[in-house]
Image (cartoon, rainbow, N blue to C red; front, top):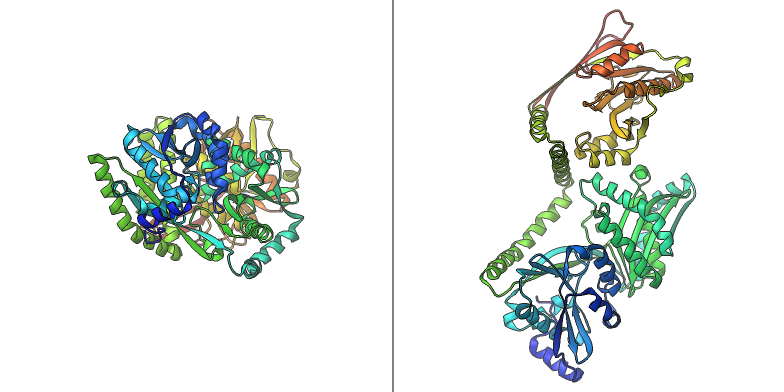
Length: 625
């Protein structure tokens, strides 16, 4: 703690020089209404610090408690000097653990007090926790900036308290310090050629506008889209977004209502022709802007809207922010390109005076010893893209597999899925053999003019799925599409393949791909039979096994035949031996077998693909894939 301010004797001298005010008592507050009564003094203490973070405001605490308070018990320590509040240590209890009120949602946490009273407030508050609050096993103070009062005054605490406190390095957060050379910094950031090129690309596509929503009512209209795309964006990289939880949605809505009137919250939206492409939720206070949450529409990924959003947010900061632009929590790679400063954060743990507390404290000391080495390993992994992609692929596979097990447990089929998983792992790593018949039919102008055959079942719906829809599918139905397959889905969409989903009574019945072999630039695609063939090729990726999907196949084949006819192409359909309903419908609609494909793979390295033509059909001669 070399960065701590002074030593205990020096602090005592400074306190004497300041004034004669001394803290004299503590109150443990367990009713939030009591904190509300003290909100005016809370606000006064917060405003006394010109570097105070938005996360220590009473508005933040109020919104957080309304959303998450039902899971916690209030256990905050308020320090008085006479009748005046001189410090607040906002804590809540969950079971036998204490933590800061407002975390883990807060990017930075700290006590609330005037600078001159910080040592006394900390000493008296911790003494109260150790001696007068029973039933807790550990008190964790997370998300502490190295500039926080708790970190700076740690060394000034009495020895018996300091021996119960254990400081552990947590992570680094990226920020742009504007102290010197402010104009040059923004000129460099906003003048990046790559970002300006992306901005111009979007402007050519239509009317591009970035604006901040100035009223809570206007922001509320945009929040559902913000939440939906935030969940999608995280799912696409194998992470679970907290914005999918009702409590988090209630909390963010509450924060906007609480802070918008004072201009401290800035909710921006980037729109193209009136359609939202990207959203940024940030906080602006005390000359600092903090980018709290942001996301973009995955279906607009080819425009790179995330970078354009950041460019517009930096442009806002150039005109309004004087001290700092903070990227907030997270170690995304893009932050390294823009930040000019890395701020360390810490976690502190207060252990009670007991044997179990001493043992946990020893474990925390060990954690503090090895944490710097773990940081170095993590930084090395970030710098090695192959390693980073490997870790991400493993994480997404594990999340997808866990999701499938949850679904199987819900359906009472854990053993069945376990056997299926073992079989798939064997096929993927040892031996995989797959054979398909490829059915074809020449399309005509009559197919293009024929209405879709929906009269069989009006409850059937055919949807062309974009990347965002496939992400939703993988997150909500991992038994249909794995998260680890999303990268391949994005590649296929980029290459011009199209995905379709058939719903029957709002349930997913069929998922398939449609490819144009002539346009495919990767002849190893499973839908390519003979490159250059004037045909569209369909392959069923998944179909429901527990009910009749004949009507769904009928609509799907009718729609794709119409699409092929409009492009003056034939329609080829891949059908395996375990799809009898599809085979039956193909026969009914006049499709005939044209090819037989065989895909053999051993140890994921050796592969042999073959294509042979059925006799009595005018087809190209067989050739290896």
